[in-house]
Image (cartoon, rainbow over all chains, first blue to last red; front, top):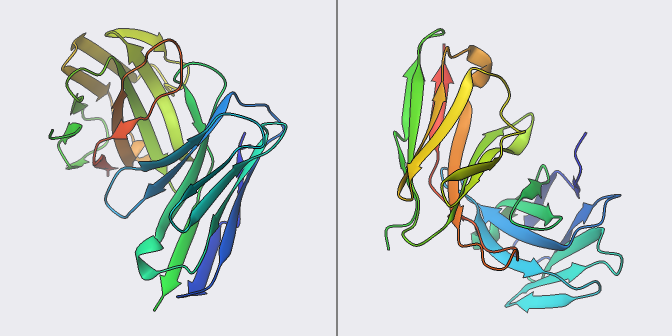
Length: 110
Length: 116
């Protein structure tokens, strides 16, 4: 049983479309991170959210942390082929130990 | 900075053999993590060290797995004896922990282990 449930598991869209990836849990996290992983490489941090209700933007990516700090979402506007990859959310309950979700595989077709 | 360095990048071994994976964290980082990634179970934390001391090894699957960090610039993950179900990509990551706050973890490129 995953502590962090990500949905959808797989997403295939056309270039220019918008999409949202969800990360849900019944547990409260002190902070949550989103990583992106490309084939053959390790995950790379995109953002850290700490405060309930927090919204952070990174170019075309918008990240939101739920008010209760149990869930998060990643919204991508006008997706591009370069956005293709595995998106992982990871929650922390204090300190440096992370629990990762299973990930969402995103494929953006040109 | 070269980032986190892992070796080997690929390892193919026969069941029963000993496997040693190596990691050099980013200079100045005081936390080091070993993860395992499979399609079935995703990315799982095996063990992590702070200031070269193992803090949490609850993710280590069995006694066949052991990890050491003899100094701040080197860590090993050893599997003895290896089994086919150990086949996975093993990642090492490092970070700088300050004041107990969550920090960015920098991942290495991983070691793809295949046990036949």
